[in-house]
Image 1: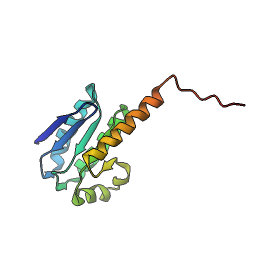
Image 2: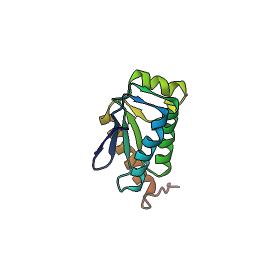
Image 3: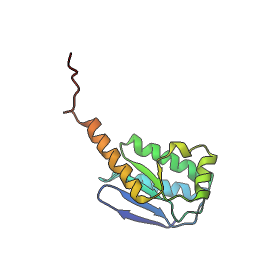
Amino acid sequence: MEIKIDTKEKFTVVLPLESHIYDNMAAELAATCNNYLQKDVKNLILDLQAVDKIDDEAVQTIAQLQNDFYEQNASFVICSIKPNVEEAFDKLELLEFLNITPTESEAWDIVQMEEIERELLDGDDISFHPEV
């Protein structure tokens, strides 16, 4: 499977260059993405702009990847999906559970918001003391 990788300061963009992601490519895609959970910059944007068709197992693998990233306190956002690919996610009733944006720029916005949210939730210096 041919994949282009673009590493940014706060995230990495993984761009499959295949027009069809077949079931047998799902494991390779998962391995590529999961490698980033071991790096300093764990946030990942999966850019599907080149993909015209995707098989069911690959759709399920991508949904599992999002779960894996969030369990590891990292962002996973999908962007630039075409209508046929969106239908494949919708057919498996996964579309509403995934973090999908129309563009990479919007995906980056989500990553930034989630980073801020994690910082606020992990901060020990924030406490709430209501006045009585």
